[in-house]
Image (cartoon, rainbow, N blue to C red):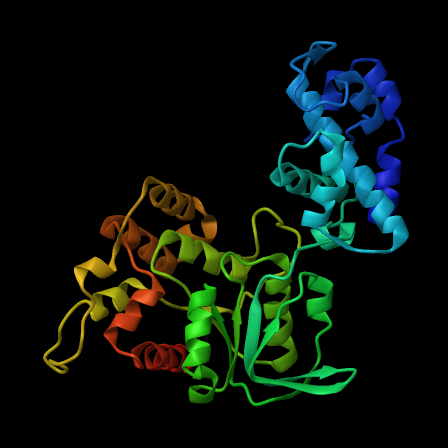
Length: 363
């Protein structure tokens, strides 16, 4: 267990640090032998003291001290049998003066999981350490959840997705009229589809992570697809970030490569290059149809270029003709299009456009 792994990691800590072994500073080692209490004494319990200890840079010592403080806090929490949100962990450790931002705590939590995974040879996702994300994500649709108080019908109601992947994986459904699981990138799109009563136009389970998906949301998508035996689709903006988000749902996160929360059967229904070309081009078949204006698009940024270059280096994209084409087309187009821009094509256009895309993609 994570609890035993953390305990065993401290076995030779004092010996290695006292001997000035530089390898104690290498966080990539599976056996990082140092002890937070000793490092805190050496650094004077301050996050800003410019110094070195036995030739080791203060910044390395501080980072290692942070790691062991996080491990100690996680160990105490695991012993108590409770779970805590990452934000709560930050507030617990903040008074010690060794962390200067919440992100440093989050980074050390990720490193803790990686170290324990390497030590034990088994995956150690964040929730195995007793750490959960704050609720971030929503779900609605033509299903009812089985609860201790009886079935809870969702339909037009919104269910806040828990931050705990294990809790998401324990959800049970009393009934379902859904034909698809539909994942959308952003909360604004989710809200618009809710207002348009999309789940009545197309019976489905509608899910959003309000941006890049957390472990919990990916666990939920994986769970509902298996539990309800439904096809799953995802709709994203036309930009490199949207494509990266789709890959995270489909193949998992590179940061948590061993968490297993993914949905390989998921289908990406857009926005694709062909969609953009269709939406901005008048046709003889529908001369009165509205088309996207040039002002609907956003300029490409250097960050977008870096993301798409990374996507093209990803074997999943490089070895898939369709994905490689989409990434190269985005890079050549050098424009971005958000889903919200489609609302300009008419009050009902977006809902019917998405319905038709889903049906044709899953035919």
